[in-house]
Amino acid sequence: MATEYSGSGDPQRTIDLLWGVHRRRRGPKPSLSGEQVVTTAIQIADRDGLGGLSMRRLADELGITAMSLYGYVPSKAELLDVMADRAYGEITVPRDPAMPWQARLAALAEQHWTLLLSHPWLLQIAASRPLLGPNMTAFYDAELAAVDGLGLTDIDMDLIASLLDDYVRGTARGAVEAAGAQARTGISDQQWWQIYGPLLAGVLDPARYPTAVRVGTAVGAEYGAAHDPARSFGFGLQRLIDGIAIFVGQASP
Image (tube, rainbow, N blue to C red):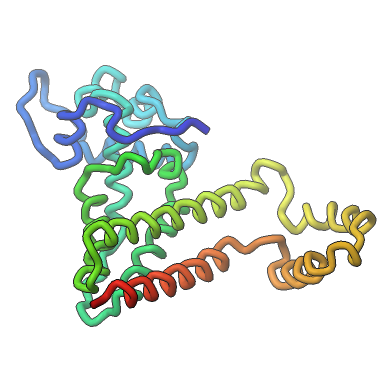
């Protein structure tokens, strides 16, 4: 799975497209809106991943020529930035001033998790260079605002946002892999364990691995599989926020 990097296209065109800056250009008036182009591109990526998205494929879906498509977006690089920022617009920023900061962070992280599961191709875009569009900026601002005024430095606030984002992306990647296992292997987790469970039991000595056997048995009975990504995400998120709360208490005057 190839990794894409945001900001790989023409810098000025990228910023113009992200922020809706319209500059006069030569040629006939476009027959489609930029919204139609981006929406269709997202639909293709949702179905087939970024590997299934090409400018020619997108043009065919839109019913226009590839040359006409370049009148809307100069290349796939700029298109990916706009697609990703548009997707982040699905996150709703909590507006209730009475909501505790812990609940604000949890709500944002949970929505981020849901977004990545809905659009797994976002995980193919490296997070090392931030998206520079309005929706991603609003999301980042909301994360910072949740912990603003708690006595933290600006750098600490940024580190907390990065910590949450790294956690969400990592767990979402595991959940996406788990969700795709049946499609890629042809069998469900339950079927996989029905095959391998008896084979493992024939070679595994409970006396040598007593804790693993006991806990593994309990997990299998609880989940019907070796892992429950959603439950792990929720558990880890709460522990992460608990830890941030301790840090905030230590940092506060």
